[in-house]
Length: 290
Image (cartoon, rainbow, N blue to C red; front, side, top):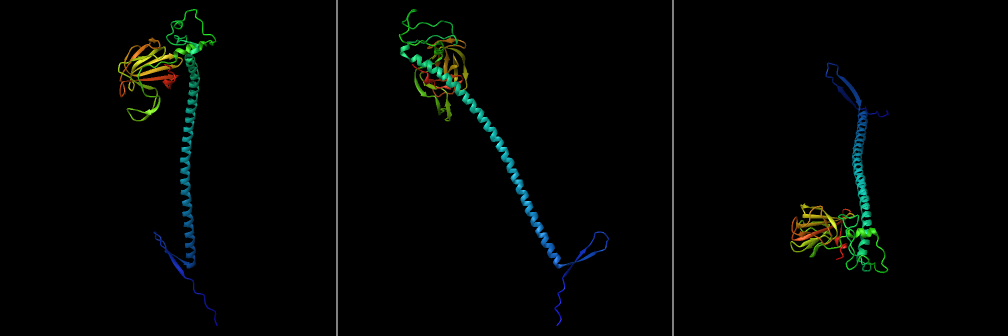
């Protein structure tokens, strides 16, 4: 019995026709070759697609890394700025604490009844100093200090006139020092002084000895007057109606310097009163003793 014959391999004819006048070429390609070529082409295409996807993913990651680097650089810059501001604030607080200690010492000595110490005229370091210290009321040139009273330090005597221990006007405290709702803008802002409501034209007096360094107009506080008391202490008065003194004039504690008004951004007649120590706003109430 003859063996079964193998079926003939199917052949495909590939015809190549040139644009030029050349002979037509024919190629016989077995069917298995075409299958292999299709598999190879499919695998190659798949690998190419995967490679392209990976490439674009790397591009996206590179873009994100660049954005993150820029954000990190901005954050480092902001951190440096914050550190500089913190250092500046710390330095300012140190200055305020040192001056606060001096003011507390002076105020404590003024309030000590055993010392019987009057409010002296400006010392050598205060502005407007032209006269020697005057004796206390009821004492003579030869009067002695109370028995057992410690001797005053010259620095304390010179600093005492700079302490604003007197209220500049009589009335009602309608707005305290610190954060508050602004009565005009209704926004939460820092109130750097106190507001004293009183009658229009009421006198405003100097809370301590000083020199007038400014008397003019401000867009918010209206007519403004500023006194320099020496040792970095300044007081400011706003919403005034009239000035009773002029720039460069030396004034004594209790001297009338202006009149209460309603100028500037104000909701009614009152005095805006500030105390600044080395340019830093302080609560005026902490210095007042009468």
